Image 1: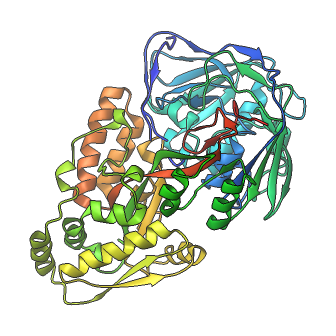
Image 2 (image 1 turned 180 degrees about the horizontal axis):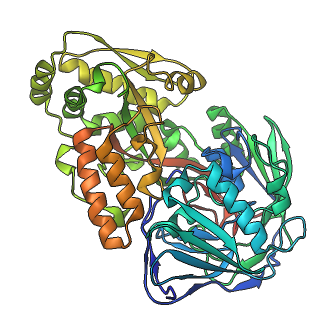
Length: 519
């Protein structure tokens, strides 16, 4: 059966979020040469040092943002969060839904000059399967080369999410040369060679990552859309300058030292919005949550989790965290994309019912134990939210102590269930429910519930979009009853550019192809 429509809806944070449905025709991409005009360089004030530039082995946003300009995958996401071909020319689905056939684009070259073949694709995706948590959503799956230009994905059971998983930008299934994959160590690949519009030049730790235009890049013949479509390198060089100080990034965009500044503090939004020659860029692609330690302590009791949920006033929390109503949205959806939407659980969100919370607290037998709230000032919105949540919980009779540490210490402490009771979490939107770490037993918070596990698996293995929607609605309603965490709302990532930057877009992070800087 050929696929004519692959509609999937996703989440991100990225990065991002989707659901996939297939009908009877073929999805394809044509390619064209992309010798683009333009020149010069873009300087980007990057807020974090990536742990690696190997996308297979980390979910770090800094890796995603830099890596998407170097690497590409078989499928990618358009602006409607649907998976579409990128390195694949077309994809076909078998009648039983268990086999996908990817016909590769011909003439695509890696940055080392070698032409991409099915052998490279299979080696890359098999490594991705081993390393990526995203890949687990596919279940038991095998990738097989069929000649030089065709790859088969064979599943044990049909999955409407298969193409979305391959398109996810988080810990993505990027394609590298087989020899690079074969020589990789446990700490990652030693060469950063992809097929993207920019190629890796140099990484000076704590200073910059330098990419330059790949002149042999072949773009697809389709309008640019999200992460899909035509990509042109309109500058010769990109420098991701590592600038961990938010005030330095803000000052640098005002003086023109940087063309783009990422992850600016939300309390500078109004100030920068009114600055001449600066454009404030916002993108709603992340959610903020209150996470419970369910391995030990008082929040192993579901009733105690319900006390917290009943007490919270989300508007006050979000305003304190993000300072402007332009920068946050009330949203109870764990997958905030439109096509994952469900009303299940809505009545449990933003209750602001202090009397109910007090009653539940008494029923739970709480007797004044101290609640340890782990937070950090390294991300001011997390600390500001924590201060307001503490006040609201104290209004119903809880005793809360803020444990304020640097982010590195928080990351270590939250993996130890003896060190905290509640903590704030911010996550980029994900492509599929299976990527929601708050639902997994191995992630901090330790959600070990057989019904959540069974429904999550059923969503992953659903054979149609309708079936997936029904299963997700059931799971979403149960999430709001079980409360592995509490969704506070969604917030905007906040970047800025100078007025010399043209064509800059975001999609769960910066997109620097089709972008140039005027002189």
